[in-house]
Length: 559
Image (cartoon, rainbow, N blue to C red; front, side, top):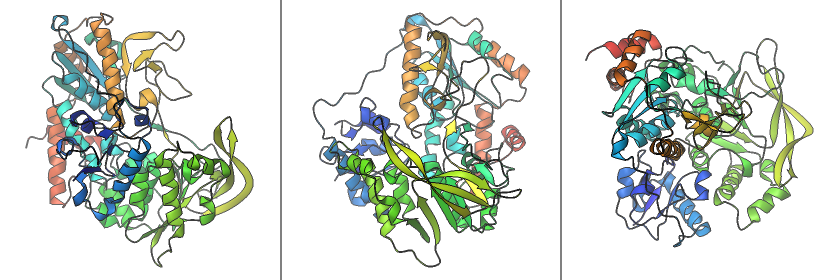
């Protein structure tokens, strides 16, 4: 018997660290780790010890003889990976972490943000002796996109929040929730109270299509829709027109697939999740029966991952529709697939799309239509969205890259709802440099740098999407944050960090004066307990509070 990693894989590589025979790859030190969709266990090397199962934070690992039917394709996916990358003696061993000499005293670090990158950084720091961490977040609740971005039906992925509890609840961690850096406390004040500050604020903005009609009512960012159905307090009062039968999503990454599922799945499934009640009720009254997902390039270049696409095709009562003509590969894409060095994940994307194209639709089913080689050129309507015009693309090889070029062939799709899902984008922070082109804080391996000189700014670091851009999955942030923490500790050990002018008690006094009633860890526990209790009464894991006022009230109620 061997173990198999399935769709829920979060890529945080915690399983890699505990495997006694180095049979889980790619490791963070391998180049494939940067682009992998999930990790893979080599069935020939696995010794059936179960260490990885115990360590996995999202329950993504199963014994091969206990796989559910829908997970059986992952046996072949793992086999294909090891055929492409056979295990050998030259595979890298895990690196040891640098230790902090006791004579240097206590290292004090502020972390701005409480999402995955922030929590992984806090875990990395608090796992070492003589480190104190203060976490700041503008919302009363932690976990960022784990709480407000993960699809409600991906319960195993949301379970990573239980892992993060060890970081924010650590005895050496102090939480300052409902405290906004730049408003209630400044960047300079954080530096005065800490050796270093890590900014792990994610990428809250979104990218625009820049086509006529994009600002019409009925045209939204998919990120807003996701935050709405997940109960984010900034978006709980948004309205989306679900009165038509067709919705169009521009972009074909995993977020697009999440949104498509939300629009066509049975709302009663979501009623048993932590989806916000207002969203469940709106979806119950929705008329949408078809979602068209539009990608500007072909199936070989699609941004979604194979596990998400595989799961899409297993939804009951929903057909996945692909036009056979749109999966006919251009010569350059076909050459890519025929290349012996082609990544197996690329070939699998094409194989799955071709499989959908061969399926016969079932009468009466709702539909998710995957469109390739098309881009929006205009959103049309008189006072609101009524249709969208797409233009057919062709792929052209330019300097070794495939670019989508318009052909002039156009079509119009009637719709009252257009959601753009073309990527998140970081936004500038007060008193910090910002790279407008990339939407990130300029940095070198997590050290924030002066954009003019390229020199590191003393004591200032970054991690997560605001560091590298919106790439990877939740677990990708673990290695990203670990790199930042390693650079921070290197600087501390080398004496490059200034000693804090103020102590921890003065920080607590300052915050309490500026933001009376801020939410600490105990306050979050009270919110969490009440949400779970409300959920249990409704037959689900959690029923969220969706306004800041409700959250603050709950944080003060003693059980």
